[in-house]
Image 1 (tube, helix red, strand yellow):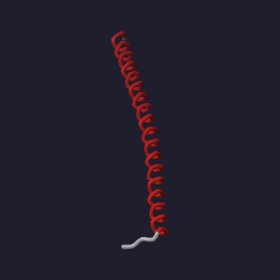
Image 2 (cartoon, one colour; image 1 turned 120 degrees about the horizontal axis):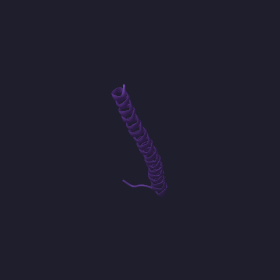
Image 3 (cartoon, helix red, strand yellow; image 1 turned 180 degrees about the vertical axis):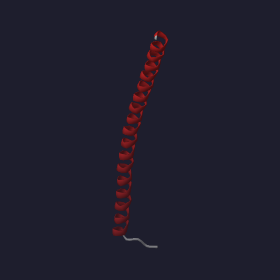
Image 4 (cartoon, one colour; image 1 turned 60 degrees about the vertical axis):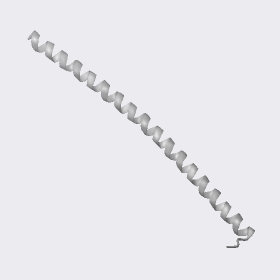
Amino acid sequence: MDMSLYQIILLSAGVVGVYVKLSVDISKLALRLDIHEKQTIKIQESIDRLLKDVQEIKVLLAKNGVDN
């Protein structure tokens, strides 16, 4: 197969374009993953705090039940 210089340039430009687009897409996905992980950590911290508060309420209710 005999390729002209024009075809080689077009093919090279296409390959570079695909590489750049994939790089940008991967960067976007990495950013979204980082944001998702941070949100997951915040949600877990909120759940842990909620469970701690529920346990404290249980203790207070148990003490109140014993006092009555």
